[in-house]
Amino acid sequence: MVILTRVLGYTTKLHNYTRKYNRERLIDSLRIHVTGGTGGSGLPSYGGLGGSGGNVYLIPEKKLTLKNVKYKLKNMKLKAGNGSESSKKGLIGISGKDLNISVPIGISVYDENRIKLGEINSQDTKLMIAKGGMGGCEQTGYCGLKGESRTIILDLQLLADVGLIGFPNAGKSTFLNAISKAKPKIANYPFTTIKPQLGIIKYKDYRQISIADLPGLIEGAHINKGMGHKFLKHVERTKLLLFIVDIQGCQISIKHKYRSCLETILLLNKEIELYKPDLLDKPAMIIINKMDTKRADEIYNEIKPKLSNLSKFLPEFDKSIQPTRTLQFDDILTTSLILKDENEIQKIKIKIRQIIDEYEEKTFCLRNFNSNADNLYTKLKQQIERYAPTFV
Image (cartoon, rainbow, N blue to C red):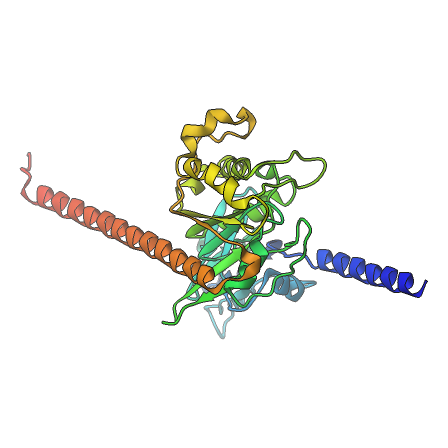
């Protein structure tokens, strides 16, 4: 009886902890209402100009989260300062004080109609989101105008070099734990990762590569099933898509069909394609996990020829899981992450770095080529204009 009570007590504590962990969800989207300051009145008899209203800006701040921003701005009136009125002692009114709102780096800003207003991706960015009203002058009949008032949406997309993609319980959290000092919540049940985790791979030459461990996808994620769009968007800014799949396949729940390892890969491919086809152009790498399990080597030898050319073998699978475009993997590695084999982990680290460096080099060369092409076009245009005949 005592043992049963202890077990039940432990279960209750675990349940309460899980519920608390669920409630402490990541806030990756925040809606706020902002208003620019009102312009000050002018002085018509003296031609005095009222001060313009202050503007509202978003500025980046390190180690800040949207959760911090939410609680900091709670019950605050987000309005910039009003411009001062013109007077006999000061014909030109003083401009209102600008309002600076600190936000995390990696924010995209939209208006209510989902029209993008801008992004904050670096420490030196400053984005104006509401303009102050014009001060009173002849054009306004010497009346100060109201500032711009709008509702904006702050949308956070994690800025990470690598995005981990896989179905629940494939080993993503175990991978992050093995390869970096991150300590994600790990257990032997689906949906271990409830909110994104960030880890850092550190190399001996002080190079660092950041990895985002995202909650497991489920079939239908592209139409926002499960955590759907909420977390798929976080892979958009990554440089490398790192797929982790279970060699034994996956069955999320009794409501879902069992999927083999290859079917799992095709489904992940399709979910990403249906969400945003451009993501398939990113470099991709796959880790086949749990190679210490029964018949793992035998299964891998069967699927190995198909992994390097998925499109050729698509007719073998049900049409419902066939993507239009198949992923081309830069590398395919096998491991058993739970064993934390140092040699295998080191090999994965090196390969991740190689793929990202190649990607960066190609991006840099392409950017320079486009820049040089634009400069050449401008020079040729100037030469043509300089020597072209003039008709009178």
